[in-house]
Length: 266
Ligand SMILES: [Zn+2]
Image 1 (cartoon, protein in one colour):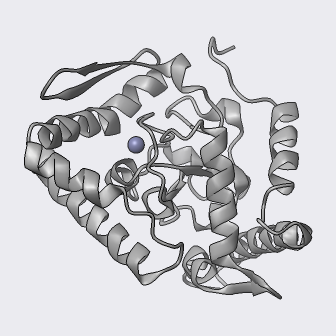
Image 2 (tube, rainbow, N blue to C red):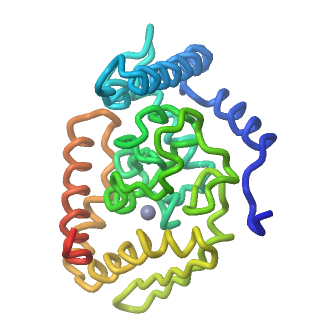
Image 3 (cartoon, rainbow, N blue to C red):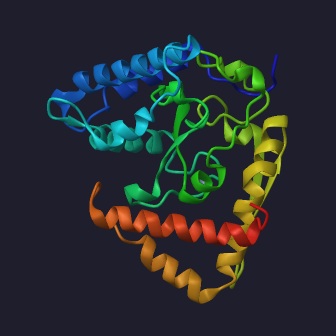
């Protein structure tokens, strides 16, 4: 028996019920949005079955289609994503699911994170438990990295919460059980030190948080860069607008460039 919290079936059912009442900003669309999501999930699983049995050679990126498309009468993927982002961000206390820094206010800086990356786990693209909200840094740095053992690859059912012994799962675990962090602010610097205290926490620090902390030092050590970033980050463009897209691209490019300095080999 693990000595850390793992979500149980009762808490999972309650969370899903809560989401059901918030899955679309317009009340009358909620039940249809929820049904549409269940349909998308079934469709992703059907593609997985077809792929396994050789009926199809490749699964399309259903999440991308969903993000850009109309889901049903009066419901768009953008609206469902927006409601989901607001719901999960609030459940996470408006902190990034990995680094626990504050999420910026604009939607574009709160990417929906596929915990088991959809490049390798397309059939979990719409699984409620595989989605969280990360910051642009964590989302970009983790990218398509697979943190689980091979026995979780090509499995139809989403792995049970208690089976995630090799990685920190932000929807099934509690961050504080796995990682301790100290944030020090001086006149010139913000420095965060992360320390894993479990197997999962140590792996998260090694795979992600050490580099996130290093990037923070790099940016904050450069006052000009820090001020420019603060200006960019205060924009709140309309969701789905061209400005939002451009800002996200800028943030991602900036994050990737800074990470190159932190992780020169990538
Ligand atoms: Zn983060």
